[in-house]
Each structure stands twice: as structure tokens, then as C-alpha cells.
Image (tube, rainbow over all chains, first blue to last red; front, side, top):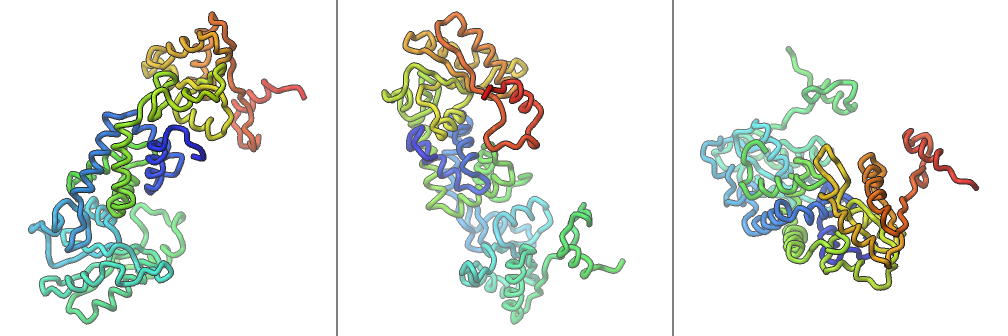
Length: 201
Length: 201
């Protein structure tokens, strides 16, 4: 807002909300109003939830995910397979895989991808810890599930090279036509990859 | 999330964030992650801002807007014109008019529009207080600036009828082609209104 309308407290709230991904200045104003209007069932609970998050949520020192226990509940779960580690870029990717229920092994969040232009090198990512975990004799396979972007793929190659001296299988998730995907709507890159990595029936 | 991934505290935070207008479940997860990742410059300040909002922000008993003082800073501002009251549906509409800097008078937020289907009648809106304010001899004009929707317009007619016995001028903001609007992109209703309410040059 250009000029103060409803006091500095409200403007500060709007400004902070507008920093959240997915909220612009306009939707941040709407969100702030909704919060103030629904004091009991939105404003108070959210304020409490944030304070609880400040106090309780930490990064897992083992896998880099976030949780309220140390190590996180996935790393601590003895029923999960300890021979396989799925490597992802962000915690959100871990959540997506858990929602899909397709991983029974461990995870390792590297916290992004290599991006020389943004000054993000191997030491800025949670990669040294991955090498340490991959060296554990119990671990037999590292599955790289990074994004199918240029940066994700160059990070895949970097990690693959780094893990080559270690006695562990390194694989990457398949790329191709997404389920339900119609060829007419897919980009050339996806079509080229899907064709190139075709499988015999 | 179907199953617990990162502890109940994080899921509660995501659930609360997803209730904000403009945030769905997916963007709420992204927002929660961004908050936890940027603890010092996002999570802590937002938690504080919300607690401050809980403590300080109240509804103005005069006009229905929100502020940290009572009456609000606009009602309390002696430099503003006290003869004109602009009636709007929501506090967000007040902010939009203040950003545009087009009102020098007072405001009155009725808090929505009449909507019999949703069970919202005149007594659910801040209308009795408007009648009281309009009866003040100092007030000479009530400008209705409600939304140009079916509900907004029926509320305009209701308020107009209600204020008729009072010695006060009642007007409504003009409807027509928005500035910069291209006829080819406008709906029939707008075109019909713009044509009907044409003005002599």
C-alpha cells in the first residue's frame, strides 16, 4: 500500500504475508483481512501454529528433511528399508513421493540443485552428507529423483560422478510421457525422451 | 496430506495456511516450507505480526473498518470531510478507494451484501448504524459504492429505500466501460449499461 490506511501492524502483516510463495500484494491483503475477520478460528490458531513451528520444527541431521523429532520420523522408522536412499531436491518433493506412497526406503534432501549462475556449488547443498551415507555398507542403491530440469539433470550427473568410487548402485527415475498425458499437449523434450527411452513389449 | 509425513505441528500449519484466500493445499505446503526454511526473516516475524494483530486490531465502532485505534484513523481524522459517507461492502473495498485517493469523506463498511439464499438479511449487515449516521444533520450525502453484482445492486436498492425518509442525498457510483477497457473484451451487461447511461458531450 502506498499510504498507511489501517495502522502499521496491519501493513506489516500484509507485507509478511505477501512474501509467501503464491501470495502477491493483492491476495496478501485479502488474506490479512480474512485473518482479522475470523479472529477465533483463523488468526489465533495460525499465530499459535507459527509459534509452535518456531519452537519445535528442526531439520533432520540425517536426511535434511524437516520434522519435530531428531532424527525425523522417516529416518527413525525401523520398518522402512535401509538399503535404498532416494535423493530429492526439496522437502516438498519428499512429501510428494510420500503422498504417492511409492518409496519404502530412506530419503536424502540435498536442498536444491547446482546453479553456478546463482553461486550454488556442491558445498552449498547437502551432498557431503549423502556421500557419507552412501558409503555405509548397509546401503546398496542410491535413486536420484531430482527434477527433470537442466539444473536438476546436471546435479544428477555431478552426484553420479561423485558416487562412482563408492560400492553402491546409482540409478535415476525414468523420464517419459506422464500417466494420462496426451502426446498432442506434451513438449518436444518429453516426446524425444519418451521415444528414445522406449521399452520392448 | 493423506498420511502424516512431518509431524502434526507442520500439518496443522499447512491446514491453517490452506484456509487463507488464494492458497490451496499445494501452495499452503509451499508456504509452510518457505516459512520453516526462512525461520529468522519469515517465520518469526509472521508469528509476531499475528500475535500483535490478535492484541491490537479491532473493528471501528463508527464505520466498521478495522484499525488499531478506536475510532479508526479515518473516522478520527478531522481534516476529512464529514458531510459525505461512502458505503462499501468490505474493508478491502475501502482500502482500494484509499489507494486510489479518490475519497475525502468518511466511509461505512456494511460487511457484505444482502443474500437471502445464504440467509443474510439487513440485520446481519452493518446497516442500522448507517441509518443512524445518515440521520446526523452534519451528513448531507451518502454515496453507495457497492459491487456491480446482482447482490450488490439489490443491496443498493434496499439501502436507497431505507434512507428515503431521511433528509440526505443518496447517490450511487457510475457504471460503464472501465478506463482502458476495450469494447471487444467487455461483457454484454457492461456494454448495455454504458450505452444506456451515456452522457451528452
